[in-house]
Image (tube, rainbow, N blue to C red):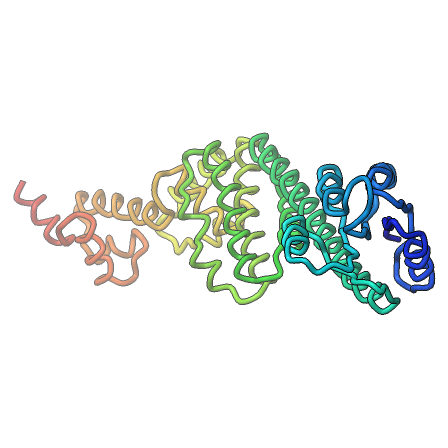
Length: 354
């Protein structure tokens, strides 16, 4: 119920308005009344009403002066003026005070109902706006809390915390953003913050290996966006797990030993990933971080270095091609020249001249 105060110097007017409001089926109750401006100010200060209905011409303190003073401590109260006067000065001053409406005498049920219904609708809109803003602030606080915890998880290298808080952040963002474009932008900012903290801790990793705004722009549904975000978070948490356990260096050394012994076989990255129970995409990044070059470049270097040794030992070019794992002779010649600036036969020829 909204509280209402009625102020008029005529007893019959005050009682009439009170009776009309009592008969209405709107959410208002009369919390107080007064017959002069001085008493009215006391009543308004004590009851703190949502609405004040006051005559302009009342003794002690006129209605507009009352409104002006009451506004100082009740800025959100709605004021309605009653007047049989139509002078411009009253209307102009009332407008500057933010008066919600006028009721001219004689006062009728229709006039009271119309203006109070209008104000009630406005109040309900304000309440809804306040509720939405409170919900927005609550969601914002939850998002900030989860982001803080996620950042803490990255710094402490706790993959479990990062995974859990990432899901919480996604939930918060979806609650805040029904528009897909906005959701994409917020998810990108979320990933940038997470990645920025991660890269600050692990400076050896490269940003472009993890995130692309263009990729996010091309996603067509919330599900796809969430999948993309989870994939990036997974890559971060995998690195955190390897970093915290100190197993990254050990795993790569294990694979380097294997490559050294089997460089001439058809070894794929997927096969290596299966050997160490690791995601192929993550292994590719980890390998580059630890070794300084991609797996393909490293395997190629191993093969070609061995090829040079075999050529120095006098083996034929075609034989060397097969021994180092290249069944396509022409491809071997081309890649050899690309790396050393001359074809295998030319390399052999230089050896003979020496």
